[in-house]
Amino acid sequence: MRLISQIRRASTQVARRRVVITGSGAVTPLGNNVSESWQRLVAGESAISKLGAEFKGLPCQVAAQIPRERIQIDKHLSKSDIKLMSPATQLAIIAADEALAAAKLKPSELSEEQRERFGVCVGMGMFDLAEVYGAFQQLQRGYNRVSPYFVPRLLPNMACGHISMRHGLQGPNHSVSTACATGAHAIGDALRFIRNGDADLMLAGSGEACIDPLSIAGFCRLRALSTTFNDNPAVASRPFDKARDGFVMGEGAAVLLLEELEHARARGAPILAEILGYGLSGDAHHITSPSDDGAGATLAMKRAIADAGVAAQDISYVNAHATSTPTGDRIEAHAIGRVFGDHLPKVFVSSTKGAHGHLLGSSGNLEALFVVHACAENRLPPSINVDHLDVDVNVVTKSCKWSEDQSVQRIALKNSFGFGGTNASLCIASYTGK
Image (cartoon, rainbow, N blue to C red; front, side, top):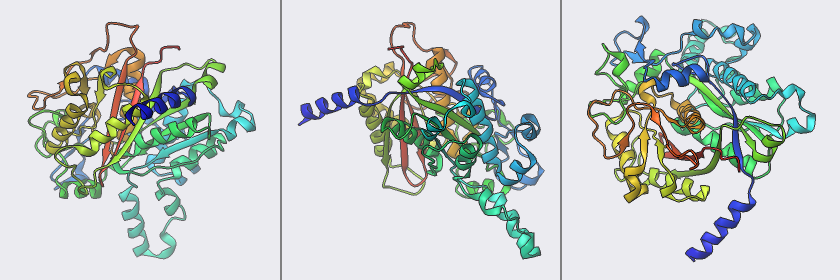
C-alpha cells in the first residue's frame, strides 16, 4: 500500500501546476516596505517600543507598532477609501500594491479574461476591537451617531474585497480567518486555487491592526503577553530563550503574488521562490494551548513535506511560529525534532518575532515573505534576543548565508499555529529555473 501511495504522489507531482512567487509587499513595524523590513531584520534590529499613556495600568507596556505618520496612508489612499476601510484593510491594500509593482504587473493592462483568472485570498485574524468599542460609545449618544460604514469596516473579508475592487480582479475572492494561522492558510489556499486551475494568479496574505487597550487587556488576562521587559522593550520578544515570558503584539500586513509557473515565464516575471507544499492539521486539544507532544504541529509539517513531494532530509531551514511563550516554543521545538529525527542537526531554525513581534493573523504571511526572500537571497533571518537557548534545535541567532552550494535547491518549512488548535505549514523553496 505504501508503494502505491508513493507512485500516486509522484504522478500527481508531475501532472499538477507549479506555483511560484513573483511579487511581495509589506508594511511592518520594521519598515514601510519589503526592502526596509528585510534589511532591518537581517541586521538584527528590533521594532518593539513602549506603549503610550492610554495603556497605563495594563501589565504589558510594549508592542511593535507602526507609526501612522511614518507610512502616510493618505498618500496611498483617498479620504473616502480611508473612511470605508479599517486600519488592517488599509495596510493590506498598501502591501498588495507593492506586491503588484514588484511583480511588474499592472492589472489595468490585463484583458477581461485575464482578470477573471486573477484572484485574491487575503484574510484577517481578528477584527479591530477599538472599532467596536468606539461604535458602542457612539450608540450611547444616539442611533444616528453610528457610522453607516461600521459593519463594512469590521468584516474580516473586506481587505480581500477592496483589493479585488481596486484592481478589477474577478477570480476567486476568498478570505481566511484562522487566528494566528490566517496568513499561512491564505497563502496555502491560494496555492491550491492555482494548482486546481481556478486561477493563474492570486494575491495572498493578511493584514492586522489590533494594538489597542482592549486587545492588550484581553491578551494580558489570558497571560499570553510579555510583562517582564516593560522597561526594555527591544528585548521583550525572545523566542527560544530561557527568559521568554510571553509574546509581544505587532501589527502590519504582507501580501505575496502567487503565479502559475508557465504564466510567469510567458510574461518574463521576476521569480523569487516556489511554493512546493501545504499542510494543515487540528490539535483537537485545547482552545489556546497545543498538546505537550506537539502532535498537531508535527502533522502539519509532515503533510506539507508530503504535499511537496520531498523528503525531510531535503529541508534545511524551518521558520518557526515560536511566539516567545514558555510552552509554545518548547512544544514546537519538540515537534520539529519529531519530524526531522536524525536530520535535525542539519536543519537551521529561527523565529523572526523577536524583531517585529507577533502580528497575530498577519504573522504567517509576513514570515512566509521573509522565507521567500531568504530563498531568493540565500540568507537566513535570525532569532534575536537569544541569550540562553533552552530548546534542542539549531537556532540561528545572527543572519548568515544559508547554503555554500548554490547548485542545491534551498528548501524550507514555514509554520503557523492559531488558537483553537489550527495549524498550517508551507514548504517554500528557491527557484532553480527548471
